Length: 473
Image 1 (cartoon, helix red, strand yellow):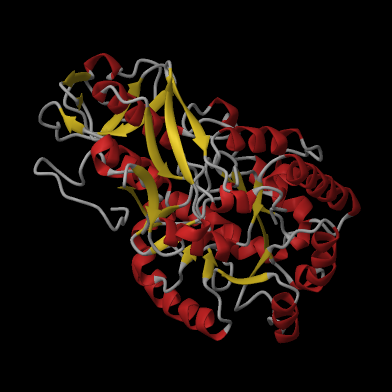
Image 2 (cartoon, one colour):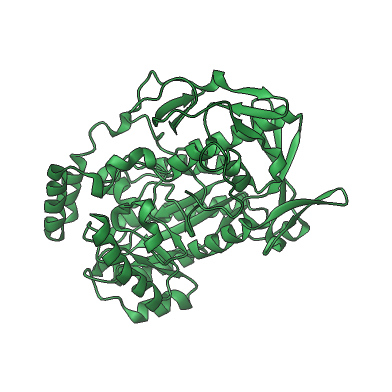
C-alpha cells in the first residue's frame, strides 16, 4: 500500500476511500466525504468510469473484465449521494494504488514471464553486449507490433490518477455545496509544473561524454542527474563523480550491472539489492533507477534509497509493459517514486526513428495541463551522434522558451524528493477565519484553491509576493 502519514483504515477494506484525495491535495479531511455504497466483490478486474477512464480493482456493482476490452462495465451511473457524502461503487484509493503500483500489469514483470519468454529474454541479454545499436533496435522492434492499439494505459500520456482524484473532489464539493477547497499547491513558490532531466550512463563511451553533456545542459541554464552503473559496464570515474557534484549536478545509482536480471526472482533481487545499497552509500547517492526500467514495486522495501525513478507513466515502448498512469510523484512505502513521464531518447531515436520534437512536445503539453512532473531520460551514449545531439539541443531550447513564459520549476530529482516529503507533512488549517499552511518547509508552500467549474475543477493559486519576478530555476 502507498504510504501516507495520514492513512486511515476503513472498516470495510483497505485504506479509507478519501485517503488518495486528501494525500494528493493536502486539503482538510472534511472536504472529501467518500464512502462505499456496498460490499466489494471478491474478484478484481477492469471497469469503466465514464467514457474516458479505465480503472482496475474491485467494485460493488456490475462486472469486472480480466482484460481491457470495449465492453467494460461503466460504474458512473452507480454513483449516488447521501446528504453530504458521495456513495461510490469502488474504493478510489484502492484503484489508484492499483494503477500507481501497476497491480493490473503483474503478468508483465520479469519474474512472472513463462519459461519460454524467460529463455528468450536470457538469450537476448547474454548476446546484448555483442550487439551494436543498429542490431539491437531491429530485435527490439520485433516486439512492438500493435503497440499503438493498446487502449490502456492511454498513449502518449496517461493521467487517469489525476482525473479520478479531481472527479472525486468535485463530487464531494457538489455534495457539500462547497465552491472552493483550499489545498497545498503541488510545487514550491507557485511554480505551475516541474521539469526534471536525467541521464543514464550505459557504457564507457557514455561516461566519457558526460562532461560534454554537462556543458550542453549548462549552456541552456539547466542542471540534471547522472545515473551510473556500479558494476560490469565500466569503472566509475571518481573524478567524474566529483565533477558532477562540483558543477551542481546530481549523482544516482543505475541498477547493479545492467544485465537485465535484477528482477528475475525475489532471492536474486535481494542479493543484488544489498550490493546496490552499498554503492548508494559509497557514492552518497539518494536516488536509484533500474536498468531498462524493469521493476517490481512490491520489492522496493529492500532498497535503501530516498527515491526511485524506474516507473514509466505509460510503457507501450518499454520491454516491460504497464505504467503508473500518473504524472505526479507518489510514495511506495518510504521511497518516493519520481515517474518517467516522457518517452526515452533511445525509444524515440532508435525504435521510432523519430528525430523531431513532436512527441516530446505533445507529452509536455499534456503534463503541463495537469500541473504535473515532466521528466526525461536522455542517455549520454545516444546523443553523441550529431543528429540525436541536435534533437536534444532543440528540446533544451524548447524547455528554455517555456521557462521564460511559464512558471516552471527546473529541479534535480533530489530536490523533488525533498519538496514532496515536506509537502506530505503539511496541512491546511483555518486560523482566525483565514486558511494557512502549517508544517516543515511551509515557507515555500503556496495556498491554492480548487474551484468547481461545471463538470471539471479549476485551480486558483495565491502567488505570494516573494514569487513575483522569481526566475524559476
